Length: 357
Image (cartoon, rainbow, N blue to C red):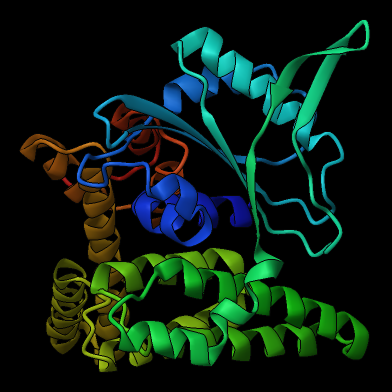
């Protein structure tokens, strides 16, 4: 999957009901939001295994509970193509009847359109036989371009002031401003370095806004990860961004960097400084930073796996024993697609993971 796919899929999984409330309120009102949704990743994989189009899709299949007490199925599609897919309606129809065939429920099909083509407005379809309608298929769409006024600075301020901050308002703004910046850069900036620098400034400005619209600490964490996936920077500028963004979010007192991560970073720096007394300050600091980053990555992986699948104490110990940063990063990347924690542990058990005995 591409970064756009990962970003949208991640934030929807973390805040499904906020997603529905913002883009599909007519569906949100039908649901019992006290009931925990269940993401049917394995079932969706079986349904999509036959796809050979080569296109990128970010799809989610979710079991929810209706206010009537009955179960319901949502099929959420995020159209992440830069150019709209002409056969989108037909593809969604195919998924709809496959879901019914497999699960015994017709899903409520939702499509979030992130493209930049105002006229792309896919609708349902009617299949006829001998001139008579025999099948009608309907789905619901939300197009990011239509939310431009709802995510203006004044609108976001009003939501924050009323205590009704929704993370998808800012997520929409992030995506729209990125699209606008790319379009502007293509017209005005001929040097790639200048275009990347402008994206760095945009990403830092959007990062500052994470703390100004009344979001919870968890929402800020999710939005930060979403922003990081949507606006990619080259390696050199990426390092600049992370240094500056940590200053911004730590100073906000919003607790973006979780306690385990902060402790891990400080512990690593302290260990490095202590070693530096014996082996040289410069080398010690370098070792400390490396150790701190390693402990932070372990803490993030433990937290994300705990949230999605749950962990035993033994499994936490296994993760804490991994001493290879690249292995931990690959494991973190695999969480989005993983349908079982065993898939993530397969990454950790790959050759070269450098466990600490």
